[in-house]
Image (spheres, rainbow, N blue to C red):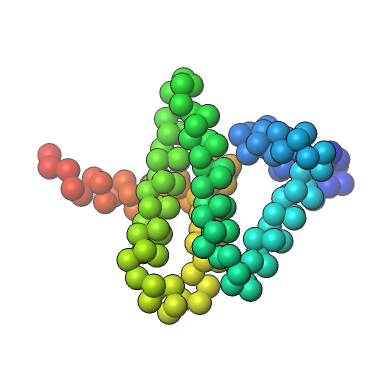
Length: 152
């Protein structure tokens, strides 16, 4: 449990939001503190991505686990346009990365840290903060692109 002397990062793990609710479920099922769960998961993920063993599997696991949880949680709930936009945008960004990856192995071979970049980008897009990647990209890229294709 975070106290007054805890770093901001640890305090953020105990703020009330969907991500910390997810961590709370994992914490109860594993009996491990959420700080250790997150540090262990991040360490294993980073090591796997840097060493190159299981990069595609790890990237896909990171990219879809929490967003799928959030998307399923939204089904049947009252409308929350902010979350709808975030997760819809996330899935568009994930699809673009996946298409790039499938379309050309040369991109992956040419860009040595493709999987690390993909995981970092997608983690930023699913972050439970106002300035997460989904919101930023929706406002600055997708909204403009969609707006330019409309005929008024």
